[in-house]
Amino acid sequence: MGKIFYIMGKSASGKDRIYSILSKDESLGLKRLVLYTTRPIRAGEENGREYYFTDENKLEEFRKTNRLIESRAYHTVHGIWTYFTADDGQINPQGTDYLGIGTLESYRKMKEYYGEETVCPIYIQVEDGERLQRALIREKQQENPRYAEMCRRFLADQEDFSEENILAAGIRIRFENDDLDNCVRNIIKYIKSVT
Ligand SMILES: Nc1ncnc2c1ncn2[C@@H]1O[C@H](COP(=O)(O)OP(=O)(O)OP(=O)(O)O)[C@@H](O)[C@H]1O
Image (cartoon, rainbow, N blue to C red; front, side, top):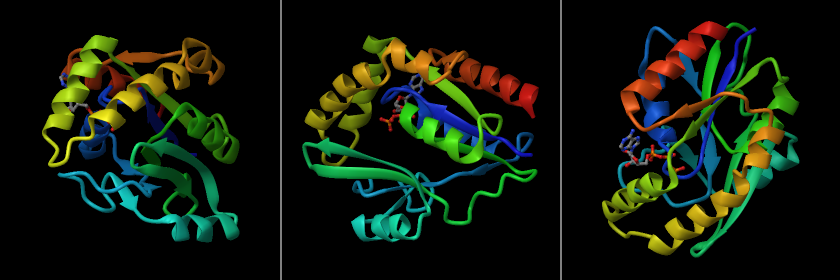
């Protein structure tokens, strides 16, 4: 049985960067699990790489056909953005290992759907001040920086990823992303230890 390695962490903790490095590592051979979102595509993103950028109609289609594994709606300053995982045929954890990104809540639903032994959490953490600084630098590089949304996410993460919620989700191991290379090395070691 293959594993689904599931990356989680607060905003700007480095999930996308780490995901990108791990997905390219041939020695791991992880297949990318691409989620769906209704949020607008950001500069530098590509449809089908970070996410499938889609709309509410597609979400409803998956819901009606019972193929919606999990969905979460964020009430952003730009309207409601929904992120979701759908059983669209891309996941067949028989021998293949997958790599995905999600939240604590979606991790819980993934465990319900695929079984606890299949879904392995990779929780990334960064000191708050450093993380906010990285978020701001990243936002400034956008064509239309969304500073209010950045702040909203920073505050929302404090609750969503409270210590209580992290422990309740059953997350026991955490990977510190102060130095990216070192963090990735530790994650690779972990992945190889469970596959
Ligand atoms: N170890 C590191 N040192 C310095 N900068 C980093 C490090 N890791 C990631 N970054 C940078 O921090 C920013 C946030 O990283 P990234 O976009 O990967 O975070 P994320 O967790 O995917 O965020 P979000 O959930 O908001 O999309 C990026 O500009 C990234 O290049």
